[in-house]
Length: 567
Image (cartoon, rainbow, N blue to C red; front, side):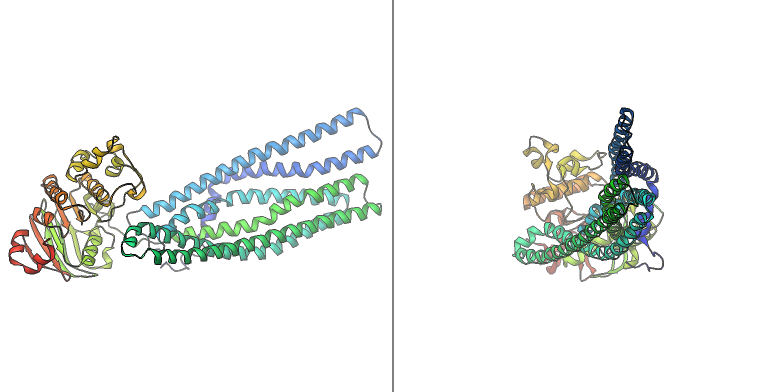
C-alpha cells in the first residue's frame, strides 16, 4: 500500500459505517422485533412473579386465572413471532450486504487498471468471501446488542422495583462483565486478523499450485511445491488453533461471569426474602430473571468479539477497496485504423525498442529471449502502466498514456500464451459476451473443428475450470479461437501454437493470415509456420530489433536466425 495513513485513517471503520448506513431500515425493524423478543422473554418471569403474588393474596377466581393464562399466551406468541420475523429481516439484510461487498471486491479485481496492492488472487478471493461475510455480520450484531441491552435494562428495572440492591447488582455486574470482556475481545481481533492473513496466503499458494501443477510435474518440482504449501497451511492451522483457544477462553470467561452474576442475584434475592424485605412473588420473579438474564448477558457479552472480527475483516477489505490504481488512464479513444508504433521503449530486457506496424499488416516478431517477449506482450496489453517504462507506445498515432484502457482493449487485443479457460462450454469460452459474428470462422481458423466435432454437444460441450478436461493443445486452440472471434482492429498473439503439432500449426498459420487479411496482426513467436505466413518478420535480440525481412530471406541470409527458428 502506498497511500499514507494520514489520508486514509480508518478505512475499516468507514466500510462498517457504510454497511450500517445502507441498512438502517432493516436494522430498525430488526431492533424493534428483537427488542420485543427480549422484552417478552423478560416479561415471562415477571408475569409468573405477579401471578404468584396475586395467588398468595388469596384471589383465586377463574377470571384471574383466565387473565393470567391469556397474558402468558400473549407473551409466548410475541416471543415466537418477534424472533422469527426479526431474524428473517436481519439475515436477509446481512446476506444482501455481504453480496454487495463481494461484488465490490470482485469489481476491483476485474477493473482494467490494476490496484496497487500486494495481494495475490487467492488472497483477494478470501477477502471477497470470508471477509465480506464477517463484515456484513455487523448488521446483525448491532440490533442484537441493543435488544440484549433492552432485556438487561428491563430486568434491572423490575428487580430494582422489588429492591434497589437487586437492580444495582445487575447494572454493576453487567458493566464489570463487559469491561473484562472488551479487553479480551481486542486479543481476539488481533488473532483473527492474523488468521485471515495466513488463510489468505494459503489460498494464494493453492491457486499458484493449481496453475503450475503440470509444469511442476514436468520437471519434478511438485514435491517441493507441496512442502511449501504444507508449511503455509500448517501456519494457518496453528493460527486457527490459537484463535479457537482465545475464543474458547473468551466464551468460558463470559459464561462463568454470567453464571456468577445470576447466582449473586439469586442468593441476594433469597436473603432479602428470608429477611422479609421482598415477597414470595418477588422472589419467584428474581429467581426467574436470574436464570433468564444469562441468555441476553451471554449474547450481550459476545457482541464485542463479533464487532472486533467484523472490524478486522473490514480492514482487510479496505486493502483492496481503498488501494489506489496503478495508473490513471487518459480519457481519449483510439482513432480509426490499426497502425502500431513502439518508440524507444526501455523496460525489462527491452532497451530502446523501435518498430512500426502499418494498418492491415501481418507482422511476426521472432524474439530470441522469452523474457523479452513477455515484457513486450505485457506493455502492449497495458499490464504495465505507461509511467513504468521509458519511451512511447502509439496506437493509431495516439500516445497509449492518453487513451482509455477500456477503449484500448476493445481496439487492440493481446492474447497471452497461457490464456485462461473458464468453466462453461466451448461456445461461452470462445464468445463470452454472446455477441460475436465470427465464431464459426474463428473455430475453423484455430483448427478447433475437430474438438467440436468430437463431442455430440458441439459448441455446447461442457468445459471444466481451467480446461481440466481438455489437452494442452486443445486449450491453446480454444484460447486462439476466442482471440480471433473478438475481431479487434489490432490483434497481438503471443506464442499461440506452442502446444500443437507441426501439421496443425501450418494450417493455423495459413488460416489466421487469411482470416485477418486487412486487419493489423502481430504475432510474437518462433514458429516457422507463423513466421512464413507473415508479411515481414522483425528479429528482436538483446532488447532491440536487429533484423527485418521476410522469413525466407532471413533464413537465407541470417545464420543466427536460421539456428533460432529452424526445426
